[in-house]
Image (cartoon, rainbow, N blue to C red):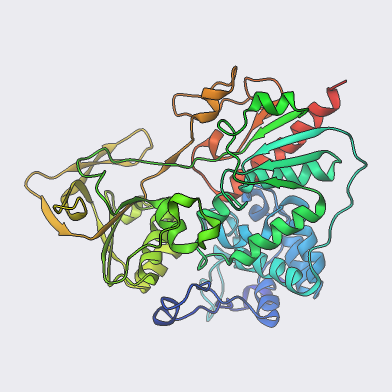
Length: 478
């Protein structure tokens, strides 16, 4: 029973099986192999079902985690999946991609509990891996059931972007009986879930299934359509659209603005990732040339999860020497510790408190060297982290063949330029009110183009809340 806390706290953590580093660098399969049903049930039994459910409070979508895990204990996996799907449209993806250590698992009381000897301290319940196990089991065995869809309202909604925010809006508004068309600039829908997440973190079949499921639900996808160029927000309204949701994310990669950044083989992270991870027919024509990484020395600049995706991609593409360079210490890194550990196990060399200040090339315009300097931490900057400052006389040269810049993302300003009345902030993020409505009537926005580059789960949560606001707005129309 849920109240049997002494028994539950004595249950040891169930390690999630994982490919050995020397094996997984030879393939593109997920590093974690997933629980069996038996080990998943035992891990779920570690939950002590706190009355206040701090894990649920820490979840951006308010997942009822204790109820889902109790149903898993009782072998009602479809029921557990249904609980997660009450509040999340992407449980199999969030279970893999969320930084659970600072969200639900970071709040898990099991990880703080004092146990008698010989048990000692134990990690929190592996909520993320259980969530993905439950969603995977349902998808593979019984399939995700299609929900009941309300009677057609006659209202039409255009969703711009098919990432986590756009998917959430499209699903929830379709359930309400509205006709939703999703416009995607890439050849294949999925947004950042497709072009920003390598296969070794999430198998593409999971996203493919979701897109096909949405199409069965009634969502229409129009690919290779960049709103602001091929069509405009105004033309969508003129064609009969009643509301527009902007879920365009933050696709523009950050630039260092240093000499040599324009050299050949200096890539933005997104281009490097998609050319390394996707099939040619999934890419725009300009990106279909395969990357030549085998035998090359690769430098990745940046310390977030995207930089970990890049170094691990480079290793799988055959680089014998991959360096990740970050201007602060590991303590200041915002990415997941799990991803850094995976990268280390696979052979990545980390250089902390180090930054390139110039790239130089050969006579053919290809990068060959990174001129670097060591840093030290000074006073805190506007983010609250101590500001990196160069150390005089610490310059050195690193031989490189490929450089990947993974130093952050910002929204595209195309829609602001082509949509009269749409206003953005100084950081290019879209201005919205508490109901996700922009400064243009009938146009809503959410996700990274409002918050700045953030998490999949926060973008999805924005989409789910924005869908409620859009539905309320549509009901006011005559």
